[in-house]
Image (tube, rainbow, N blue to C red; front, side, top):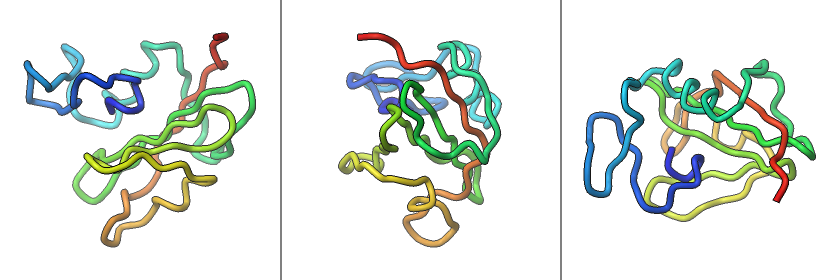
Length: 120
């Protein structure tokens, strides 16, 4: 979540606050709460079939694994990007690369949100 929100100072983790940890006040750890974090920033929910990176739009894909909400991938309009835990950042053309329920996969995309790309 920190990577998807451009926060390089904190690790976003529900239930752990202070120091190097952050989680938005008043929100839990459900898919709806994760979606709310992005709708507060001007994103709107689209269909899960809206999976392509689209020039002029930023997108967020929220993944859910067998345990619960697990991962967020972001798109700058050109490709998708992900932070693999405390490991490296990766760029990927599709969300399919990370989908699945086997080892090292993040579950299924259940929500996609988008907003117009902000001018620099």
